[in-house]
Length: 196
Image (cartoon, rainbow, N blue to C red):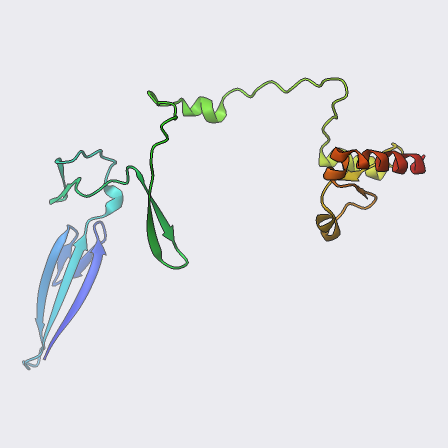
């Protein structure tokens, strides 16, 4: 009777077989016979894989070869240049989309400064023109609603189906489309006059 045991471990992990510590990549075979002298042999096959986290980023051009822990790797295969790889994890399927260049695109000749792009100076806030509405934070609105001393008319400009789902107590529904058509302005004046 012959039995095989297989072990896969990563470099840096250690396994001891026959008082031998194994910690470098490769495949090792060990045969064990029963102490009673019967015909059964147990074979242990250990494959020690190199630890990929120890590899540094390396740019490899086509035709070049890099040797890592005794194994050679080359830049063979197709790059995704001009293609987009889409992975659907729900269905475990891959799709590949071909991309074409936009002939009207601006040519990129240098990399942007990402620190400046992401964390750079913020633009000056726009100055208000007479007649422009001021912006208000949620906290400012809450203060006005709770104080009940400041005159206000809170207009909800969403569509009726959205207003039915949730609304702020005391708000008045006048959809934006009605305001833009002028019909809503008349309603606003009527609501304001009723409040005062």
